[in-house]
Image (tube, rainbow, N blue to C red; front, side, top):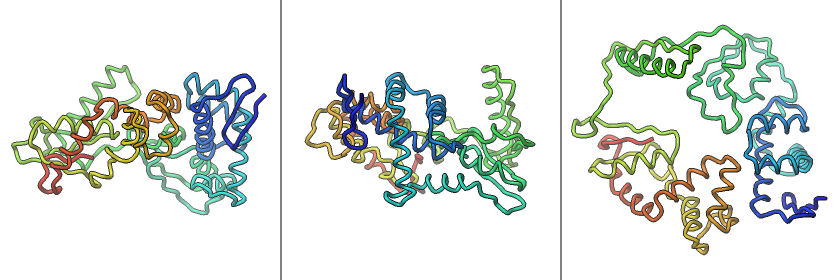
Length: 335
C-alpha cells in the first residue's frame, strides 16, 4: 500500500523512500510529461508508459520505480495537465503544441516547407502527416541537437523522394573532396553501405591548419558540450594565446551558481551551497547517482567538471578571464 504526502512525496508501507527516490519519481513525472507532449500519443495510459520505457531505456533503478509507481505517475501527470488546461497552473510551451495536435488541424496551404526536419518531434510530424498539402522537408541527420526533448529524425520517418546536398558554400573544393574521402573511409570501417558522401566545394582555396598560433591566423574551437569545451580551453592555457568566446564568456556558465554549489557539495561545505536543487543532496555521490539515473547529461557534465578540476577550477577561470580580448585580436575563438 502506498501513501502520498504532497504531490510527489511517497512512502511505501514496507520501506521509507529515500530522498533520492522522491527526486527520481518527481523527475520521472516531469520527463514523462515532456515525452507525452512531444509524442503522437493521444491518451495518458499504459501504452504511453510502455513507449516511454522503450524510447528512454531507463537504468535499472528508474525502471523499478517506473513499474512500481506506474499508476501514481500516470494519475499525477493527468492531474497536472488538467490543471494546465483549466488555467489553474501555468502551461508550458509544449502544452500549446499538444493542444494544437489534439485538435487535428487542417492547414490550408498548397505547399508546406519544413526546415531543420532532423529536429522535429513526433507531435509535429503527426500534425504534418495529416495535411493534404505538398510537404518539403529539409534537414541534416548529423545536426540533430534536440533529441533530449524527444525530437526524432523525421528524415528517416517519412516516405518521399530524397535529394542530397551536392555542393557547399562553406569551403573550397579540394577540402570538400578530402573531407568526403575521410568520411567515406569511416563508413567503410563501420561497414555502412547505406551512406556515401559526395560533395563539391566552392572555387576558393581552403586549408586545414595544423600549427596553432604564430602565423597570424585565428583558430576556431567548436564543441557540443560545455565540459568538452572547458577541457579544450585548459589545453590552450600553456601558451600565451588570447581568447574570445562567442556570446560572451559568462554565457558558458563554467563557474555559475550551479557549478559552485556542486563544488561546495563535493567539498562538503554545505553552508556555501546556494542552489536550492543541489541543497537537496547530502553527498556528492548521491547527486552523481541521480544524474546518471535520470540521464541528465548537463548535470553529469557539471559533476565531472568539478570532480576533474576541483580547486583548480578557480585558478583556470581566473587565467581565462586574463586572456579575454576582442574577437578581432583573439588567437583562439571558442564556441
